[in-house]
Length: 495
Image (cartoon, rainbow, N blue to C red; front, side, top):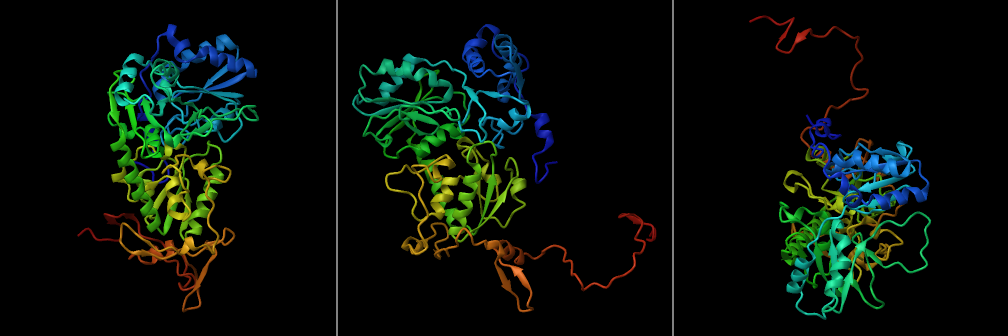
């Protein structure tokens, strides 16, 4: 039976952890897992203890990879086994498990498999091995030419992380004909304290874009290499979803299967995703109580992001509650019926991870949607419609938009709910030093009670729980209670 405040222990025992034994033939291990590069990374750092993190579907190769690395480096390798819930607490393995590595006394961590490439919260050296997937270049070239007949149109080559190694080769085949081609690359986190003499390229969506001076990413269309013909539903891919949400709506976006070269225009899917997100923004604007779900503890700036979201809700006149429940499930969130919407603070892939929306009583939003609902100055001119990482909302980011001052007319702008049709009242400004939870309201009996939306919700319930009635119940000596079970107490007759 599932606990309301923790994920069930049976889920970890019943979960499929991959095919037993080796998944990759021994002669192919070095190439698939880039063991030569990993060994060089370990030797350069001089590490004696190294943690290896594998997703569940690759655990069959973990022992062989660890043995090969110990043989070539002389360092002790540890395989992190706590993969039941993922490091973003959402059942994903895209975030690095820095906390688990530190508990093993590791001096570095190697992350294998798909990754969100979010910088870790602690300064531990991390290397990523995205695992290379074969790409049929000739088929992808034909697919690109079919989708982009204009050789002068600006296009960006994108891919899922496992296909990123083939983008330069694909661009080499296309450049003789296409003049304005841009190749993206995975945005691996920079080592702590490293300084680059050259300016860093634009970094968005977990990728870097080497734009020429004066060019903007919004000018480019996109050609995405990734996915599979056997995938059950492409809408469930969080990496592709964050690209579709954040890409300029007026630019074409097409995808190509790296195995078959089959292409698909993603415009309709992007429209569905944006419509869903606009609906969630309206729900957040109507909400009075917001639940902030702490979905990650291993990604950098999660504390600052949590404080930013609390300040947003307070400025908009809403009450917020911080909930640390692990992986969100309908049973857990149903314990908080007074909450109108939940906001999931997680890595970019975790925030867009597929949720069974029909099973939750209230919707789950991403931080960007709460920003759009609570900040009247959002979005700034020329910004793409959706930011997928909460770090983009914080001060210091080029996309940060400060809250307007209390006297700004933006707070007084009339706003009508597109869901209920009612006119929303302008929010009352509350400074960050004004703790709304301490506001007191006098009652006619001169009693004091906390004034909050949660208290108002409780007062509307027909049953409000047991009342202690302190000082109103006479004190009596303890007496013997009834004996037996409910079906037949000892003092009851047999009739």
